[in-house]
Length: 179
Image (tube, rainbow, N blue to C red; front, side):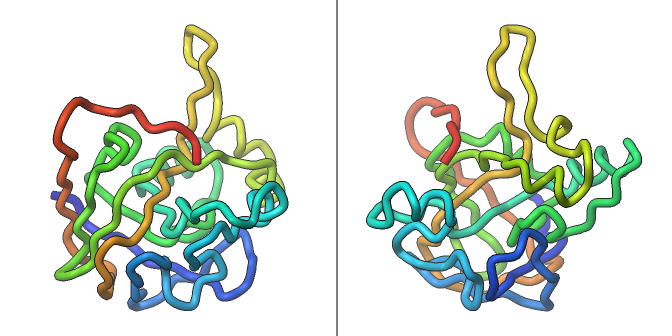
């Protein structure tokens, strides 16, 4: 079982999200009071492509272990700094199957939809950071490490220190793609 290290939200389209003492997840919408909450796409690049698409990026989760790694390389990354809503510890987020349910705290449940596709804004946040969160493996495949995206299936409050329970979907593991 993992833990929630921090929760963050921003009512405006900002790259970094300030930490909060609690966030409320709303089923089918996302983080209450966050600019990316809604049934339909809210990320600007996706709205430009097709504003009628479902929002598969309601809640962005990132593993604190990535922050640790980046800080050891000389960057200064804190929870919410890379735009995530929920910073986790002790869960292999990138290894989860698409469709995995994450029970956050006493009530909230999110369903994993895919990988965050990092954008050049990361380098605007801290120069050179992008190459450490997206790269290529030995076969030349793109490897995305900037967290995962999810949709809210059960509403509830989430706070730092809350437990995270992982429920894999029935059937074979389905590798996540970018959403």
